[in-house]
Length: 194
Image (cartoon, rainbow, N blue to C red; front, top):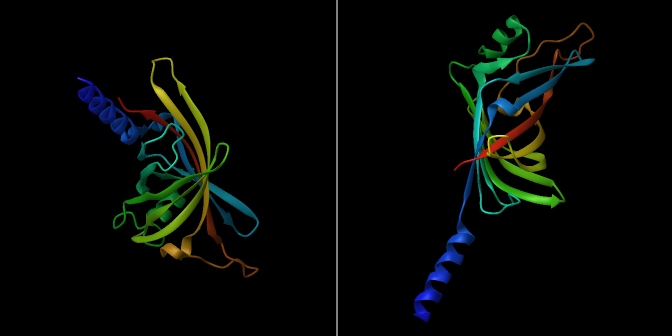
């Protein structure tokens, strides 16, 4: 009897230690935005309206969680139809050939307090490169329907030339029309899966 109890307790502890919690992105309460320098004097902002992602976590504070995310590039919106059409063309994203961009984490480490460093591989325009995101974990809360939600803010800067997005033209003064650095700004809410 005692051995059976000890074996059952060991199995419970072992299962608890390796249990994973799955979280799915709550797109209604999330955003995937970006900004890029324009004419060297200002910035243009945009967003992707369709995206999906999930987190697999073994700990309540999300340390070492596995994160996967995909974006429908065709959902780009810069509040200008002609610019969006150009961005979808072969000059930039070439959405017919590369309809999605994806991110897969390789590490998610707490830096201090609620600050984390997320490292992973971003695949965009058929090219995969490592990217680092600075992440702020907002905490967890239950909504009015009893669903547990977790909130995050994440930011990174990527060089679009690294992904073969090299189209540009020169201004009258000789500067680039579109900057090479893209700032990615994510505000994400995830819902715990039951």
